[in-house]
Length: 313
Image (cartoon, rainbow, N blue to C red; front, side):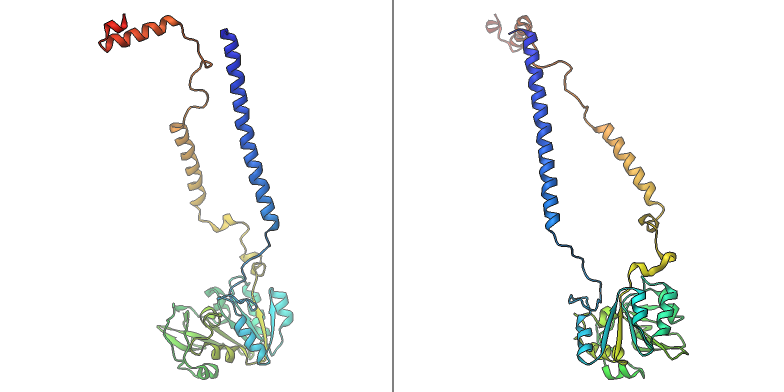
């Protein structure tokens, strides 16, 4: 076989091998995409319920207390946005807000004024200060039962509870269940006759904690006083345009973007520095034809260096 024919054969073999490898990867990627699409199409849509959701049976839900309230004749109406909560409220309603972080402060004030009783189960200090001026975080809470030590009837009837986060009680507010420098329950009454009560709903009302000490009795006393409960879980849309971030970049510190860019440039530089050269290892097309004289001389040098003159001859 001539050298040209050998070279043509090797080139065809290389092209065939390269094409086989390419189509193998294409087939593998196609199988992955098809399998993922089939699995995703049959996967049911599900998302975890919000903490303290009225119909959530999870450990952090509030289905237990809402069920007990309904069994005792209290009407419980759920609301997922400010408009629904506003429509369900009346001057004799108890408004339960699970978390004020997603609620615009002006909307919070408006809803609290429309309700007879407002109970806030969780929130940030900015929103809590809007309805109880001067309130602040005081303590992380205690796992030991705590006596009320106040004149609030619902707390006196409930007795000891396992409290959660404690807050300071401003001069115009009353505190129950002292924890460190604060109180586990803070209550303030407005001149209009409405009242606002703040306590850690996750520690008191959640399904897994409701049966501890007097937690259930306190919940029934605070929430069931009017016979009409509007259970409001604010959504991110209720935060308003002023408090909503336009994108996730608005929530990141300023140094994150330069650090990401620097990391990408460092990775590219390391790849160019330590990476292997692309392409074939040798410039010639294999197999290469070697003259017989070169092979003979090479072997002779090996025999001579190994001390075998007879064998070399």
